[in-house]
Image (cartoon, rainbow, N blue to C red; front, side, top):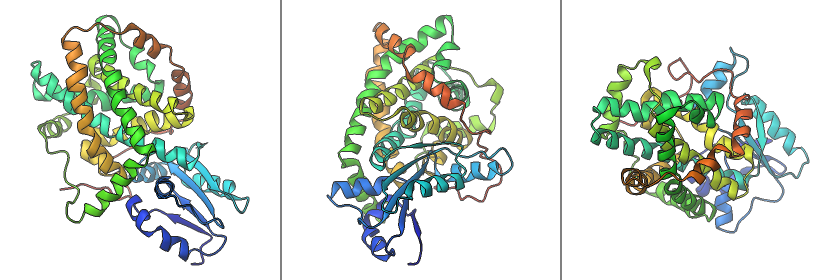
Length: 396
């Protein structure tokens, strides 16, 4: 074609099928623009590369498409609010690729951008959505809901103390004050409950998270997405909010009092432990703090959890990419199972709190970096119930 910049926004699985046709159709000297590093991951896995005569850039908003659009529209009225983004320059034949990527990010309304590489982006992004962004939080809520019901709570109270406590209280504190502020806001017995839950949940969660990272970085998870894409005609994506947990959630949301949503210290300990474990896996793999925080913290609290708070797990997961939907469905049960089998049983069996883990948490260097990132958050909270030109998905 005649385009100087070809922005490729078809699904990841479709990119893997059609990339040769896309490359062949681009004019010499054109720039390929990506919103995600998946295509590079696929090319890596089959020992292929991008054509050498083109610039290849990526601008990757740290949120799903509908949230990017919603905050862009809100930003027109309120101080240029928008979703922050990473950007990467993979090939710079023209010498102008960085300028083009930055200009594209400004056009998206990103309040700030951080530099990465396409390879680092796809490893952290595909990993993150299978972890605390989507898959892990789904597994956490399912497991805690059942636990609280077994302990004698009504189903409505159990949903409030699990899902609502996360989306209506915990993530709001993290968004504006940082992760450690959740812990610092507790006192007395509540702090001890948090510590027990954190101590019991950190290593089981990290075990699954390390497995996810290894699967992504090796190319296995990319192959999973492509194979799932090949099966969708025969096995279409199904509903994930049909369990009793999310049926109760509909009733709770209909009668919600935002000001009365509790801070459950056990829920907070499990959620924060999983978030910290996710950060540590990325840091140990050499990812920069800016990427770690955006892929493990900011995207969760400012883009994704507001969708779950508004309309439940499926509304959050199914408005994400096919790659994210596939990974969330695959890994959520693993978090559910390992927390049930290893973390909660440790608490119930009276295993002592691991004081070293708690000390590592309270003194972790990431806390200061998260607080700085909180200062750069969008100037408004995303509004999921206002009119928008974006199309949002509800699987019936």
